[in-house]
Length: 99
Image (cartoon, rainbow, N blue to C red; front, side, top):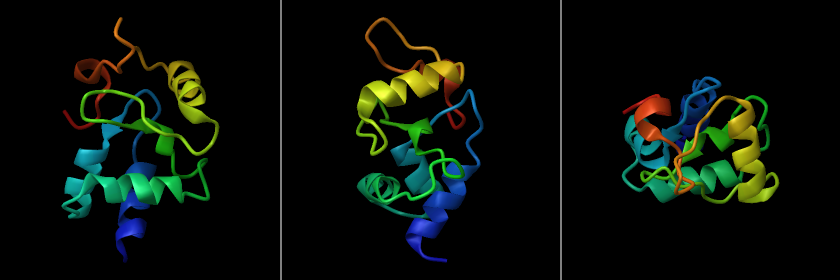
């Protein structure tokens, strides 16, 4: 299994109502650079099976989303029950799958 396949498998396990970070996904996949996770998710061809919108920065910030941008990413996360702090970041204490 190559790095992208590992990343896709891990991300596919993030349930609705939860998020993970690029760093945590990288750690689980055995990858040292979280940017590889971002690159893999940008190349994701199946967002229904691999919910890349559920991966956020280590600070809870929303970063690029290949399927409509950050506003669309936030809209999807809110629809799935993810709450945001006043500063616009995801409340990682409450919604992180891997604290």
